[in-house]
Length: 183
Image (cartoon, rainbow, N blue to C red; front, side, top):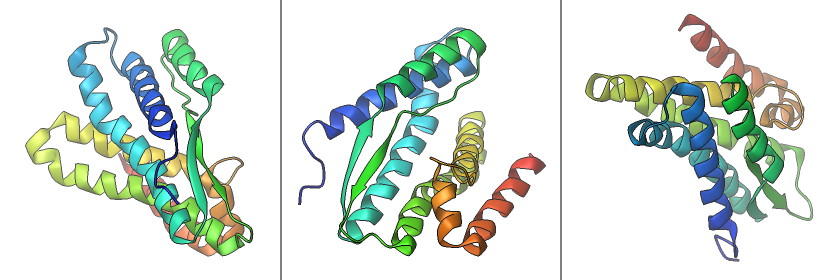
């Protein structure tokens, strides 16, 4: 079973570029190369790590896992960022195929993406003394991505984590929410 399927890396790259552009437009009045690199290094890495968390975990359970971009989600992200300064990014998802995927496996696979964002938020937090506002942006964005994706509504990851275990969902979601609200 290949790790990346034909065309998958290209779809990941298009998605990363598009959400980087959308967030750059939302964060900066004038999109500059410096701004694009800051967003790529924070949001782009967060997106990639999140999706690869799902993919690695699904593959560990013996599932076929492939990222597929969602063209309308990408278009909407750029359009909303340009029109309103707000980004609703739905660039795509890792699609998983397994004959008998259990509720537990699905819950853990769904939790893996947000946990990658939590890990990145922690790394960015410890880099704040060295990288200042860039690391602070990475911390904030990855914390937001984790919390947002854990909202318990479809099609977000939180709905599948909650269906597997409301206790585990709450143990991850509520500390993230409290931390986010304290900022």
